[in-house]
Length: 356
Image (cartoon, rainbow, N blue to C red; front, side, top):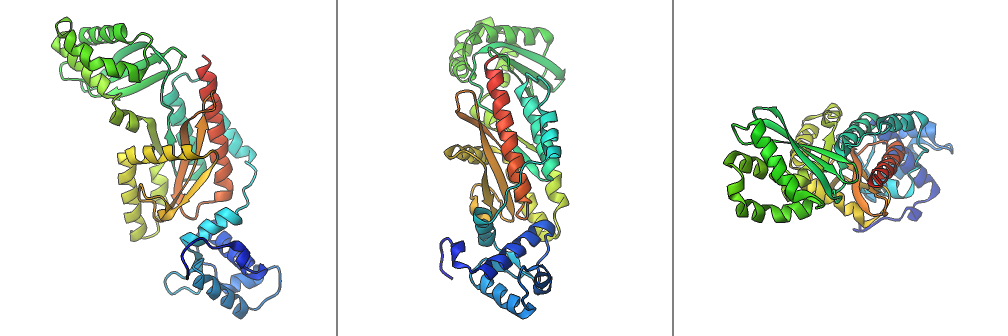
């Protein structure tokens, strides 16, 4: 078989129908599809032997494979790609799916991270996959910063922006934190932060901390430094990617190979930064994109697929993305409109918040 994309037009009507029915059967129940099943479903009356010949031809072309010693066939990665590009019928978004997404985003939530967390949970629940939400980079000027103690080893830094959005980020404060050190640290930062964006504040932080060392006691200084670490590039990357519904991937695993693959994927999801970078590649094009199996080199998607769409702010600039990871036998026809609609809705809400 030659390398390179295969053209659907090279298939005659019968081969195309056999191919389409095998893929649709596999996507709906995950099982190999046999010739006997197809003889009952085909639009023209043909024998099982004829269908077996067509399936062998499709296997030779690299579009179908036969797992184990089963007489049935399943699509290969190349076959799935061709189906998605040329034969996939994307449905209208169902009313029930639409209502569930609308309900998630229905409240006037000013905390972007809370809103996007709910979006991720809804996407995961609707699609029975793991959801990825890349939060927008926050470029509005900072209005106010506050530290809130959540316990001896957990604290919250609350960022309120001039456009009214709020971000809460949990971090580990230095040992021995006190309410007065928290107030002092917040006052120090607020004096510096007024009118600056997060990235602008980060640039001035290091020099200001060393220049004004005497003004801050050591605990407040440590608090400022550990709180600011939350905004550093690495932290920000991780913070910006929300992953929900990993357990759905485990539920769909059928054997040890599947479980190993999913564990590797979980490791990648834990690292998150590679995926945040990968999702930013969606900025190369608008609309929903589908990555099947090993087409994505950045993390171990072999045996999984990613359906992802960027979303835009009020200036029509792409600022984030929403996506779903699941097995390659995802119900693409249903999931594509869910991801598309969610991305548009998130973009609209981000734009409205931007107007304050």
